[in-house]
Image (cartoon, rainbow, N blue to C red; front, top):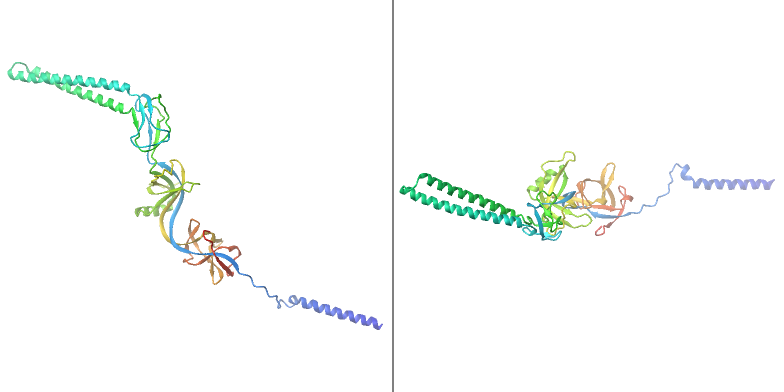
Length: 378
């Protein structure tokens, strides 16, 4: 009986010890949270930073434009005859005055010879009429003829002079017609493929041109801009500050020129206004008819810019993380526009601040950071 009592007391002591250990292990729960486990400090986040710059930034407007020639001439025949010569290669570069087509002129040559003969006959008749008039004038003074004969001689002389004038006009017209048998380039540029060859019969009523010449240098680039830019553009044009750049898509090559014309009306359906730039195009980079990416530079302005990758967006607006004293701080900013991967800041930055451009996903206001410089060319 004593041994049973001893075993009961031993079990009681073991139970009390186990309860004490459990109570110590769970003391944070039954003590109302007064005993807390100390958390490990959060490590600093490595971020990439760059400086907010204050510099001259062009005010650009991007659009899609089309290249059009300043002059384009469709060559047609002005006489009914046959082609006897084509003096250019298809697509060749021609200069003003170059002979392009020769037409059969034999019929006109014969008409010119006939007109020259008529003119010579009329001139002979005028000589005879003037001789008769001089003779009758001498006789009337001697009383050997009548005034009627004098008047008739003068009329004959006047008629011969008028006939000469008419014959000369016919001859001049035929010479003009003959000049049409030599078709020369009225402008310099690139000529298309000839639609006719030697032996083809042509006439003025033909609808299709013999060939077309497009002026290649300079050329126009036509594009549209929003009406909100119109006022700034007109002011810039007064001071010759505006310029336009045309870039060939997928090529990267570009041509720079100036504004030649702004359309006098705004399209009410789109709110866009048509602008025409003129390019020197000495290398013939821009080909009539192609589409190009145009960049209209209205003016240059002094502004603060940051890489667009550093600008974050929230429900309250745009912001950037500014690094100060080893911590990231949220700085609200106002963006006016973007330019070649940069955002132009209207307000919120003064320039010179360290802006986080990589690693923002791990940041909140006040997060400790370890800045690293942005790689060159990033």
